[in-house]
Amino acid sequence: MDIIVQQKLNADKKMLDYLKENSYWYKDLNRDSDNYMKYVKAMKDKYHLKITDKINNAIDNIDIISSVLNALK
Image (tube, rainbow, N blue to C red):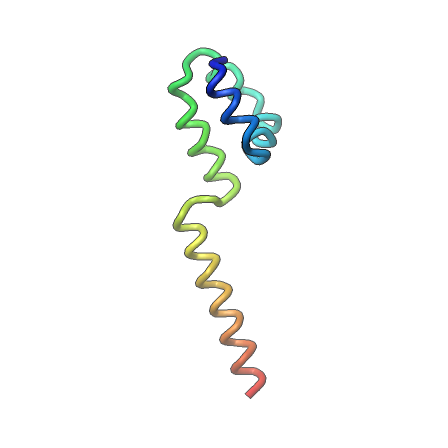
């Protein structure tokens, strides 16, 4: 595995956890460091770290807060 890819993986705990849970990525990352972007995309899909996921979570939180405030009226 490329040193730069190893450093990127070690910099983020979630990336390491995902790699431990899905060890088949070792083979893909060892073969070609270009697979790193596919790995990051798969990790973000699993842990819901995409921008759209964050926006949906914020909207859900706003809905919960507004419903609590309406219940208090």
